[in-house]
Length: 490
View 1: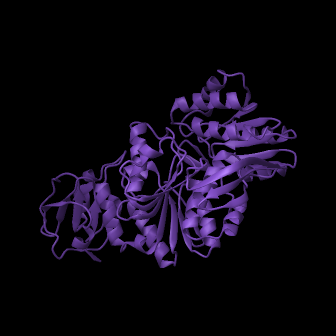
View 2 (view 1 turned 45 degrees about the vertical axis):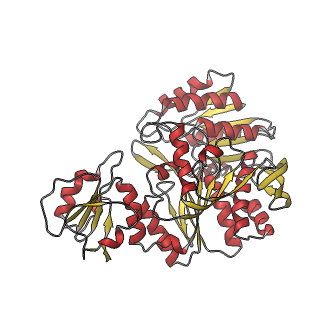
View 3 (view 1 turned 90 degrees about the horizontal axis):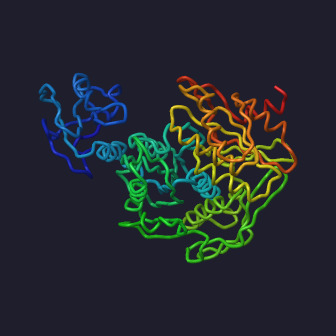
């Protein structure tokens, strides 16, 4: 139980009816199905549902208080308090933090935002800090990790109540730190309000997540990312990104930078590619506030250098020894992020989450630098999503890959063949060679069985996902399992 007055700290509100004096709250909910007698219900406006429309329903359940953005036409009840706020999501974040007794205050909280690199950087940081003796929780696109427990993620950054609940569990289980991905959507919807990040981290930014129910334009996307640096104590940023200065406008934190340019606090030099049978990597030296020679990362491309610099910049502030940093960079493999899967000593195969044109272009450009015998790209596009993405990805693969295998990827409620034909439309704008194989397992088998010495095969789009969504049903489908079956002749 908590006093209602304790939960209403940190944000402005007015009392529309009832009183907060002496009011005890038994639970907090923002889903009407979970509202209960004596509880507090927060009316949230979502893309599909508006919690205000369920206010009468939860009032009949006997809730003690309702937080809303507008007056509610409810039967008067002496023991019901209605509180009005400007933004109920903003209020929910502060209410949730108070409900769980402000767990972030017991943790060192690292929040990483950016278009690319968030997931890999969080796992690198977690590895480095844990090897240095810290107990580290993780919240991100793939999963939430608390101790030995791994829970699949629904959102990159959970709703504020779920986020505070995870923080509270980490505190109870002895974690001293948490590293988390912070999406622009989460910042826009105030999921990360109600506490201060110890470290806010920026990897990079490119146009993405722009459209209905996301960001209206790039300026809005950039502005939302920048909110993190008005809510953290120390900002660690990619000093090479051309948008960094604008993103930091109005920041209230101390700043540190990483990048390739020697004006950054930590910067890389002598970057070189590493190519071994079945694996690709990159090596470099580090200078500035930290000096390290002959650093190696077991993942390809310049973006892997940036991910490494990002993690090193954070680990440095935690006092992690450089030998632990080296060990982590060579040993961490992130599921579905340029994940190498051994299928042959003669050619390489990788799984990556690249599922839009920008990410696919970055991936294929990086792999092209390794001068493969052939660069083979296997991918599809999700159904009930923008058709433009299909045309664009087809064109990118046609331009950068030597051979493309168009296949199916979460067709949802669309005809897989129609999606593949859209991709084909994009490829036909180029001179790229391709084949269309609808069944994803057959497409992967074709790539493996036709692999030649020196080839690099990339399976793009699924990444960490272990399902195929068809007509509203998620069917088990893990590319690693498919590869194993193919190699075993199944």
